[in-house]
Image (cartoon, rainbow, N blue to C red):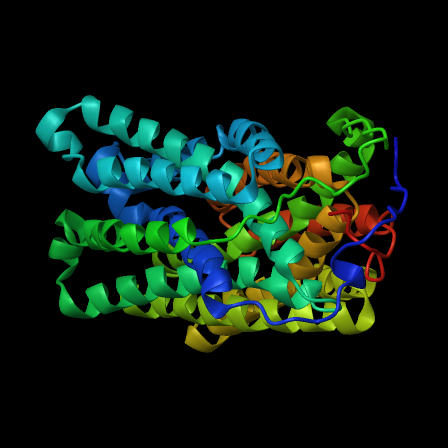
Length: 436
């Protein structure tokens, strides 16, 4: 298995003089990315209500289990989206690939927002929801690779980590917006109205914002440019993704730890309502805090990765999370309350954001230009599909099977340990020049 990647030579972001990038260029990437994740994350936050609407069952627990199971369905098409849209980004350009993902997420969001309940149209309702999740999964599978690569390729010298951090920071903004919307709805609406129709409001708002993101992305520059070569100089062979399969496998294992802890944090709303029996407002406040934490610590992680290198910033926060997760969930079990719930949420989201930011800049830095978006897309999509799609289902099952409120920590700790081992195989890439 290939564990190292040869350094490239040539001009690139690492050798360019620092220059200012227009704010609207970064905003276009962040806005589109945030909207796509807003829609996907909102489903997780309102899983309890979506389960009651589309997946009636004999017990509330089974309804919830079906709902989070369909949440996992959205991950099935992520690898396909990663391969197809990632390859499209490496051949046609980053900009057209990111425009395509916006169109796909629009279709999935519109259908989910407008689908009648099971009580109204029967079995057609859950079938439509499953199709929506598949389309959304296809879009997100192809979004992260091109967006992350674009941010790295426009970055001035010495700031690739900070620029790349906006990809994850935008996910924090999405979580903040989705949870803030849910928190506001929980205060404004009665529990009956929230369950009946209130949960649809975030998806309708998302639809209203999509044209803004589409407009911004249409004005983006293209960073995938054919290298300037002399006429007589032979063209190099295009890099083969399979030649980097060993490194991509390592990247999948690295992304696994970040994915499990991220979706465990996203599950805290459902966990607080269904397991700790907290009011909806208290539970949704945890996700607001998680969104703020992800946003802030992602930017901190990018700054640290530029200052101290990628490897250390990947390793140390993941090690801290491996050690701290079980004690934090144990505290929630022993002293259930807002303080322990919020502390656990901050630890999960903050440490994950710092480590993941370094991962998302190191992986594409170690891939050649012609497969940079494809390689990152595949690693992300496969890692998130296998582990993100199953995390909430596994956690729900563990809680039901063991009756132990701290059981989610077992899964987070085990996957974090595996990711730590994979990180040790990744070379430092901070001083590497990007092939353009």
